[in-house]
Image (cartoon, rainbow, N blue to C red; front, top):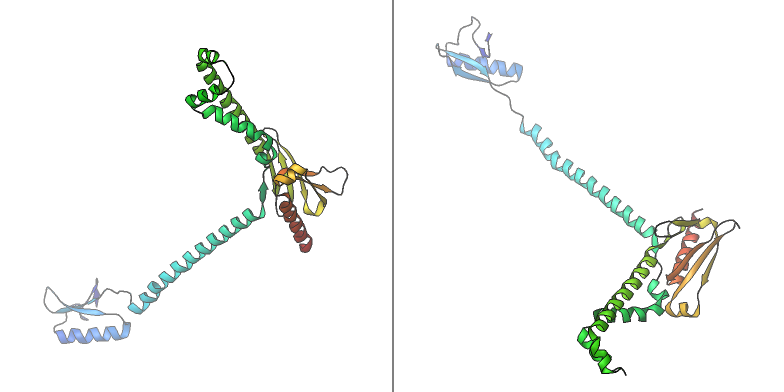
Amino acid sequence: MRIGDAIYNLDGLPFRSFGLATRMRELLSGESGRCYAVENCPDGGFILRREPEFPRADAVSPRRSSEPAEQAAHLGGLLQRTERHSMKMDSEKRAARVFRPAVLRANAVWLPVLGIGVLLAFIPHRLLSSLLALLPIDPSVLNTGLTWTLNGLTLMGGFLSGALLFWLWTEWLSAAYVVSETGVEAREGLVARDTVGLRFQDIRSITLRQSWFERLVNIGTLELTSAGTDGRPVRFVDIAWPGRVKVLIQNRMNRVEGDD
């Protein structure tokens, strides 16, 4: 008879002997498959009480052993997704090539002026006064306004070099020529943008123009035209290594034609 969580004899009393309680425990364990413990009853005799069940080792170990495998599989999936993302980013970077005009080569005649401006802006006054003393000028004229002359030359050199550097920087920044996987594009303008593009399927001719000076410094202008007369040509102006850029465009045109 069960009273609460304890099992007593059929008449509701504790078992009179330990042996009788043990035989009842074995009988109940064999029929139910559960474990029971023999305990002393405070009123005398013995009672049976069901023991708490714990997960078996063979039932727990597979789950525990599967946890590292699941974590490893999850980590492997994250690594694969990260690797695919990085490969995609690398392919996109390789796909789009951006070229800027070679402003230093195209404006090489202004480089000596820039050098003189930088020299006047940063040369020490003592050295500059020594250089002025070598000129065929009356020393008395130099002595009266030497400080003013040196300061004026420094300011003029700083303004000249700063203006030339700013002009070259804006020329470089205001033009970008893109060769992507699908076509070419020319973007010009610093404040207002003018963009002209052509797909590789629409390009019918590629013309490279170089003067003798441009051939000497290896720059040039690429002009890409389409079959239609109304379409605007795409011009890559003053780019460095124009022959290599032309070969790059032709290779991508051939790749697109092969895919079609």
